[in-house]
Amino acid sequence: MINQHSENLLNSQQENAPDEGYIFNWFDWFCLWYPPGWLILFNRHWQHYHTDQDGWSWLEYGLFLIPGGFYLALLSRWLRLGFRSPQKKVGEFDPKYQQAFRKELLGPIVKYYFRGELQQVENLPPTGPLIVAMNHAGMCFPWDFLTLGYLLSEAKGWIVQPIANPVLFEHPWVIWWLPPQWSQVLGGVRAKLDDFEGALAQGKILLYAPEGIRGPFKGWRRRYQLEKFDVSFVQLSDRYHIPILPVVCIGSEFLHPWAINFTKLQRLVKLPFLPLSPLIFALLLFPSMGIWTMKTRLRYFISPLQPAGLDTHLKKGRTAAYQQAQKLREKLQLQINQFIGKS
Image 1 (cartoon, one colour):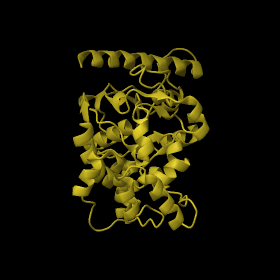
Image 2: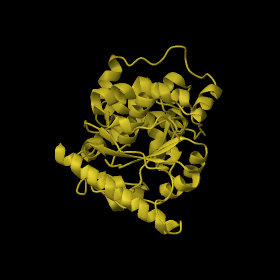
Image 3: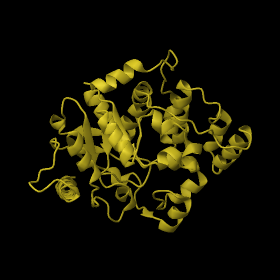
Image 4: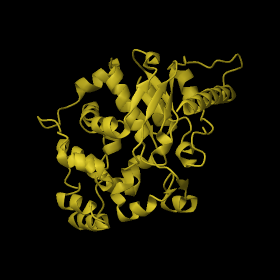
């Protein structure tokens, strides 16, 4: 069941797509199983539904597939655009395109590459609004979030929007890789307090990582060890009377295994994290692999819904919110340990 706010968004959305949907064809299957081709998948799907004169061309797509070819493709595009970067456009959330993206592109990836599955689905509430709080890791493109959003959409018909690090909206590397307004159109909400609160005030279903950037930052050595939870999601849950749905993801640590954060270089290039692993050598030859990840099995365990409100007799405040956030972290850590032990 889609919540009422999402239905209104769908009804008010203008038609901007071709009559025919995107068909996942033989070339897309090739790109799925050949890592440098993943960037082509996202951009081809976008260009099917949007006019993007600044986007990548077919010649440049071909260059992605050969060692070092991405650098020639980047030069070609830069020259073609008249020695400038792709224009930064302000995009608005388009539920219709989000649904097409999930059905036509994410579907094959989740089913055949990540083998994503929901477990304990009896704990899913009938509708939103909700804060879906999940452990987040992998030190790579947030595939654990995209996969969960797809699975929840398939299971309940929800329109789910992830809280995303601002780097996915504005970093120069991302603007060259993907269409400048791609994250916004797909429903990404900036991980800033004002944006988070505004989305909750509208009654949306949001995916949130309570660990923040500390989750993927911890790397391979501390895999499956939850970091300290932020308190903002507990405070906002209490303020807007929106329940929290805890979810444990098993398998996300293997999206980019053996990685550690290269802190000094990460700060230099202004990225939230910069993984150093044996895969980095392949990335230097094929920068289009920046959104690729290792094949893994992503399993999501749905915990019982946590009602809104601080469960303490103390005066409401940051201390009470902190205590509740860490209590939830301890509960999820225990569940993770149990699930790993059964694997």
